[in-house]
View 1 (cartoon, rainbow, N blue to C red):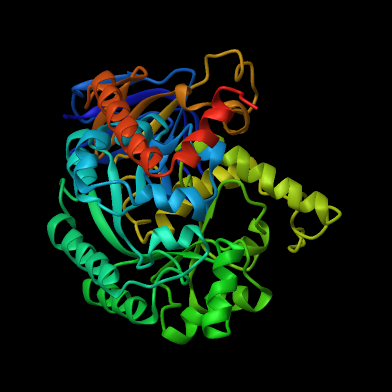
View 2 (cartoon, helix red, strand yellow):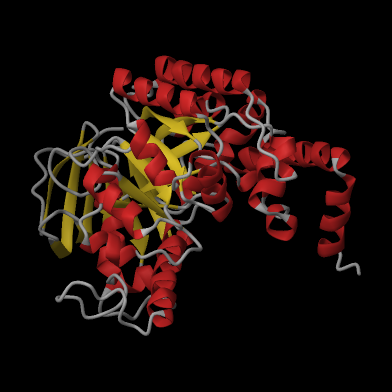
Length: 462
């Protein structure tokens, strides 16, 4: 793709100075932002011009924690719990499945405006090949866990050393095969799943790999009470205390969820420079984290990778928490006027904040000269958003992925006028649906009681 001029838009740079240009332009050359401001004098004739009148122009979202579990939509929501259905279903996926599912996954991320996404998956190679074609930016982690998933359904933790070794080998191969590929749009991390699903030996091996390859490490941290209980049983500590004693709690680590962390845990996280990845459907103390100087990124997590919807869920969660605490618990800083983040703050955390968590703040996350041209535009011309006096507030509260009409990654247009340019969406979705049906049918054949439960809910049988 040659030079691109985006003109006449409401430019929200999301830079550290929080600059906004109500009617401005962005000039892109060789995959990077060359200039941004009220008006841009094009140094040459651009190959492509996007008229962004009545659109917000902003950095693409940085989605810091996502799994490819959307394949189980319409099943898990009806009959699932994490240990009883989710994890066993994951065991039915095969490496070759991603050849059929990968492009549909990329399409969802692109449509939702996630120009950069951390994707943690058991068999990520097929997804990496899809990313090469689709063009989005990803940080890939090979899921490292070593429990017998079938026994875990019944609440029994049995650790399988060979399974952990195989998972670590996949993580090493992922780094060697894919780190820096797709013109640098694919990078990797080390991803031990959680302290109840990974042994001490394997966590230490993951720590060594992160140091050797100079990579970030991501883990689920105090995500569930079951995790907390199992770690307490094994080691007599909280998951955070356990990882500290292993030497894993450091500024390489990103902890997803942190729903059940204690006050001591939070102090350890802050002192170690650990980042927190805040996901949907929880009422975590987000403002407390921010006011204590902890870096926070947002992640869609599992079944629905819509970042605008995620922002509303996060605001809702913060509001519920504040209300349950009498409206005062989260107002720790004297300059806070509300018990939840501002609308601008959540946009900031979903862009520049996420980039900084990943150590990519110098390359992405804001619209500044020299940075990668990872940009989205949000169409304001629908009756749910316009009229409005503040477009940013309105897209947070009322915007949808369908309003994200243009998506650019690395200076390449991936979505133009609401339509994908780098993949055949219909074919990608049809291939994905066919393979998902096959995976779920295999699961139901082995667990007829789950099929029965699902059918009762879908067909409203008593």
